[in-house]
Length: 197
Image 1 (tube, rainbow, N blue to C red):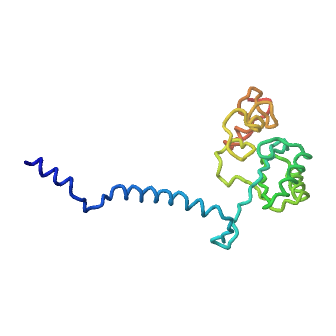
Image 2 (cartoon, rainbow, N blue to C red; image 1 turned 180 degrees about the vertical axis):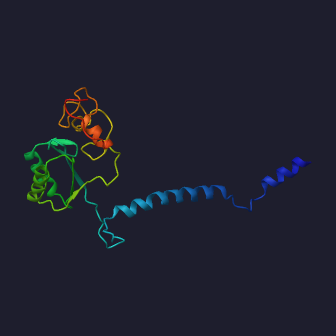
């Protein structure tokens, strides 16, 4: 009996529209429009106005010039001669914006070498020159400073041997230990005579 009702229902005309295929077609069309609209927008060459009228500020780069105790120039950690320094500074001064030159010299370097570096910088047209120094009390006492102004702790510090080692201008013992004169200067004790120990 239930079977006869099913057969009669299948012969009747459907009064409802099946929405599933319609929704599928609409979703496909929607995806196509979403993909093609950005392509159409970027296909036209239009110069758009910028949001702000201020020019973007570009920070000028810095050039680091170090001078060691022997008067050798190091331009960004590369040793250079006087002529090479002048050539490299001329190239840097041609940049726009012009970089600033930061000079860091060893405290035992002759003033003549620092003055020559400043003269070369002004000859090439560099106008922004600054000096890197160690603030008072900034470093540990008795430490040597490397070319960049940092405290050097290894035995290879370029002027540590001159200040502490033997056989140097400070009157050391000659065995690589701390010089007698330097040791007594720190303690404030009087210097022993050269003949006595």
